[in-house]
Structures are given as C-alpha cells and as structure tokens.
Amino acid sequence: MPKFVIERELPGAGSLSSDELHSIAAKSNQVLTNMAPRAQWLENFVTGDKRSTASTSLTERPLSASTPRRAVSRPTWSAGCPS
Figure 1 (cartoon, rainbow, N blue to C red):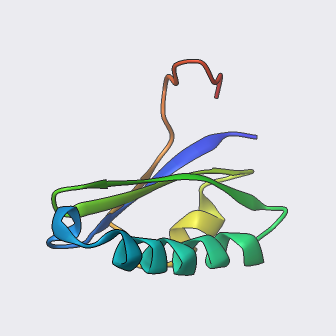
Figure 2: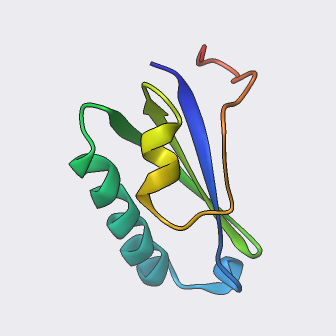
C-alpha cells in the first residue's frame, strides 16, 4: 500500500510537552483507525511549528478529506522501507 505524509501547521509544536503531543497524536491516529483498512497510521513527527503523520492508504483521497491539513504528499523515496 502506498505511503503518504500528512503535514499540519501546529504553532509551537516543538515546545509542547510529551503528554500534549501524545494527546494530539492519539486524536489523529483514531481518525486513521476509523478509516481502516483504507488507511493505516505508521508514525508521527514534530518539528518547530509542524506535525506530520506518516501513513499508508490506497489513495490520497481519504487522507485529504480526513482532517484540516497543510499538505498530503507521497514520498518518492524511503530509506529501508520501499514505498
């Protein structure tokens, strides 16, 4: 199944506590769980003012419609994990 990265703006994300980030990620992961088997969560990443979620999905469409987001993109290369 193809991999996608969903980027969301989250001002101050890099300074949130682990508990706050866990709570935010849990909500996002639940959305993807509800989309199973069409989509599956893989991993979350946080940088300065962004939060990104790596997931698999048959197409980009369900991910684009799932939640407010900045971008949904399909990686062209992934080290150690063919996409």
